[in-house]
Image (tube, rainbow, N blue to C red; front, side, top):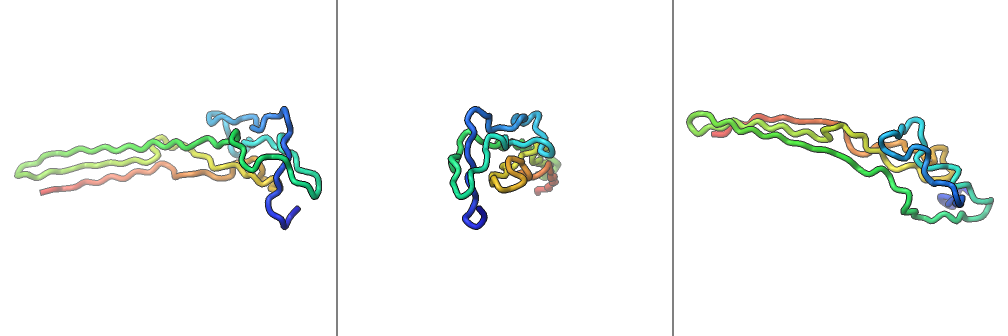
Length: 130
């Protein structure tokens, strides 16, 4: 039903809405579908599906990000201080997956095709105060 917006699918009772791997530890975005396509069959022609607009059981993995900072002040003679600072963002380089494609008409339905956040990066600075 192109032209009227996104088509809502039906729900198949008794079938898990999650794909086979819905834990962060074993999930591979290249091969695994996060949403089980068989749990959401397309509706009959010219009808609306019975799936809710928002299903609170289907949630993404969440966001994990470890940031850290180190600071070392080194006193020097004559009231001079040397300060070393290092900051690291996403220190453990955790991949944060985006939301799965939710359009039933899309070939990517149920698959996660994006990531959120950035990869690990850091910055260091040296400050001389007098």
